Every structure is written in C-alpha cells, then in structure tokens.
Amino acid sequence: MMTVAGSRVTVPRFREDCLAFRGIDVRELVGVRKDALLYVQPCTSERGKLMADIELTKDIDSRFFDPGKLCALLRVHRHRFADLRCSEALGVAKLRWGGRDISIFKNGKIKIQQAMDREEILRVANSVSRLIWGAAVCSVCGEPVLNCVSGKCGKCLRPEEEPLELSEITGAELLRQGHAALEGLEGLPSQDYENRLQRARFLALHFTMETPRKEEALLGLLLLARAEQLESKLKEEK
Ligand SMILES: [Zn+2]
Ligand SMILES: [Zn+2]
Image (cartoon, rainbow, N blue to C red; front, side, top):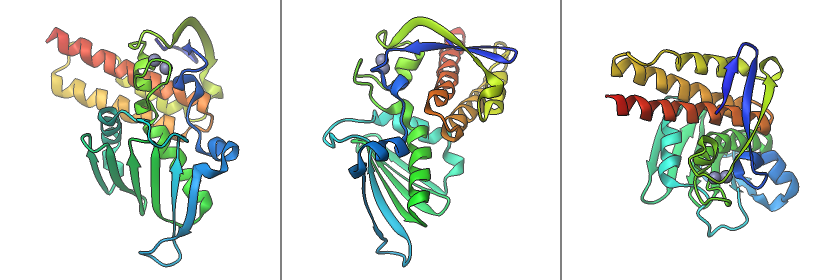
C-alpha cells in the first residue's frame, strides 16, 4: 500500500502488462493509433463546434469498463458536472462538463460533442479517461484496475516498492491533502468520516485527472484504494 512519510511516498509496483502499470493516455494512444480518434466533424446541433469519438480499445466489442465502477467513479466528481446520468444496466454514462456533452460507453468509446477544437477534444478525453481509469478492466486478472491497485485481484501487484519525491510531482498538494483527510477517522461519527472519505476520493481523482505523467497519475488511484479499504474497515467496526 502507498505510504506518505514527510516529502516522500512509497509506492508499490505492478506487473508490466497490468493496466494499472500501462495507464491510460489519450494523446499517446492517438499518436500510436491514429484511428483511435475516430472522426472530428462539425456538430449537427451547433455551428462551428466539433464532435469526436475516441476509442480506448481497438476491440470495440469488448467490455472495456466495469459499469458499476464506472458509475461510482463518475459520482465522486458529480458536482463538477452540469448533468450526470449513468446506467449500470446499459453501461452508458452521459454528462455535461464545461459546455461539452460527453458520453461514455462500457466498450471503451468516449463521444465528445460541442468541443472548440481538436486540442480541446484531446484534453477533455484525457481527463475523462483518467477519471474512469480505475473502472477499466485489466486483461491480466479480468477485474477493474482499482482492484489491481488495492491488491484485491491477487495477480497484478508485485512485492517491490519504490520511493518517490513528492516535490517532483505536479499536483502533489492534492495528494497530500487527500492523505491528510484520511488521518484519524476512527472514532468520528459516521457522517463526519463519510465526508472525509468523499473528500479524499475527490482529491485522489482530481490529482489523477490533472497530473501530466501517467506513471504518477497512479498515485491518485492508490489514494482512492486506500480510502476504499479504510471505509470497509470502518464499516466492519460499526
Ligand atoms: Zn491488473
Ligand atoms: Zn489485477
């Protein structure tokens, strides 16, 4: 598990074929496979704006996202969205964020409408896919990445750990505040600890969305996994 001591964090390592290690980076994906950005064309609804489909996987019949986890992760950031609807049964999420309409499908397709330009499409797609990365199904264990990160899947985590300097990580303050929110939860009334858990989850995902390097984005998912573990422990004690 990830630990923070002063200016350093110790992070676990993962198998190299695990999606927790490989990460999600839309720019990189589009660089390697141009047709991952399926089309950019004028919106039918609004003149001068663009719409695009981004396919996070070539295998469009696949179950790329776990629908339950997908909805849960989006709900953590729900107050940033003008509108959020997510159906676990259909495996589809629709949300409105910063004037853009975004649809996410469990097969790994993300549709963005009403964007200004290609650059904006890539930026939004990258942030959104980082937000829901934890719900993506890892091909090593067949479980959502969040279960790889927490070690729950039992297959992806390696025994080694490595230290990282927090000061070298963009957005590390979000991580520090997130870890602080998880301190001393035992003994708090349930409303208070639930607020603190929600704050930690929000900060964790905010960091994962904003930090540029995908290797470091993993630190947000590790914090999220820590919040989940603490929550189940606290619920057991009640
Ligand atoms: Zn994995
Ligand atoms: Zn796994």
